[in-house]
Amino acid sequence: MTRLLVLGGTELANRFVAVAREAWPDLEIVLSLAGRTRNPRLPDCEIRTGGFGGPEGLAGYLETEAITALVDATHPYAAQISAHAAAAANSASVPCLHLVRPEWTASPGDNWQGVESNEVAARCLEELSAAHPLTVFLSIGRQELAPYRFLTNCHLVIRAVETPDEADLPPGAKVVLARGPFSEQGEAVFLRENGIDVIVSKNSGGSATYAKIAAARALQMPVVMVERPALPDGEIVETVEDAVRWVAARS
Ligand code: NAP
Image (cartoon, rainbow, N blue to C red; front, top):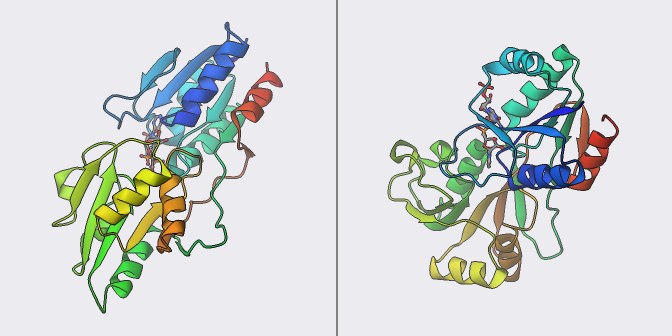
């Protein structure tokens, strides 16, 4: 019998679990969450919460829990857990799939500057704001704000689902709490009302947070795009349907 461990914390993981449950009501699925979100939306399946204790801990869990297949459906920027998944699956001889939604690609009219990390994005803002102050929409979540704390000539508008820790907040930053999906019209209003000059975004992919990118294009606003970390070697699919086919081939 297949007993599936899904590494989640994303809408994509929840959707995968829901579709897999509908396809095979008897399939055993354990959904694992890091435990950072206070009130996560959860699908109907067994849930476990908290880190495993590195790749060795995860490999041990796979064996103890008799897991027969592992689906890593974590956020594309959660690089550590994806690497651990690949290593643990390898050492426990459990097949592993990475389910990650496709990246956004620039369209005509987009003005993106790709950077490899938040540290580089912050240095880029420092250069852009050298001549005159800038108002920046930081759309990177709440966990990686530290690199932006040293900026002196930028007013930062941070939008996140949950309140960032006080210690991480750049001085003087404005925090807006909101959860997508957002509309292009709403994002255009948000950008204008906050006097935004430049956006910093992750390349999250998907539709829920794409509207700010479309609004930036229409307003000819520059976007500093923090590129995704590389995924570990292994099997990768981009859709829930392909992930369900992968599981079917192993059941
Ligand atoms: P990370 O840096 O790759 O992971 C850090 C550690 O957190 C991992 O080594 C692991 O601890 C634990 N962990 C992460 N995801 C886990 C999961 N699904 N189940 C059990 N343990 C997990 O990841 P992160 O940036 O902290 O992200 C944590 C969670 O938030 C992930 O589930 C991710 O999908 C979600 N998320 C992340 C982002 C983002 O931008 N990073 C955005 C939205 C959602 P051990 O080594 O002890 O096993």
